[in-house]
Amino acid sequence: MDPVDPDARHVYDFNSALGLRLGEDGETVELEARAPEHQIGHGMVHLAVLTTMGEVAAAHAAQVAVVPSTLTATFLRPAPLGPLRARGKLLRRGRRLCTAEGEVYAGDALVAKVLVTFAVVA
Image 1 (cartoon, one colour):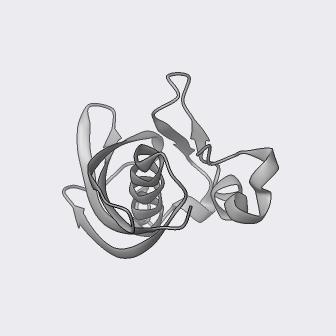
Image 2 (cartoon, one colour):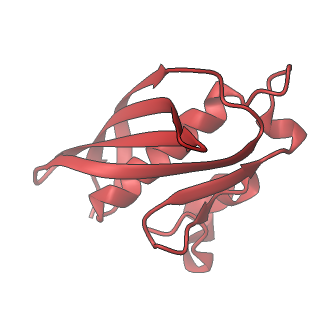
């Protein structure tokens, strides 16, 4: 699932508006977090941006159409404005549910970890 797939705009408009893009490796979700809507004062990235990046990376790792059922986000350190990347990992996939995680990095620093249980819709 490409967060900026032009054939699925009805599903991915929010991610596109946020500025998310799939990295050149086809696995990493990337964002240049500098816009006012990315910020929460003091030059830090808003937790909603970090959560979204982790969730999108986790959904990408599922490799099927999914919608979040439950989500837990852990914020490990403040994320400064600038380039961010997230990578997902599928932990378990069943017929109706799957669980995946997304890790969000600012440089080499892990800034957030997102654990998501998804309902499989396809």
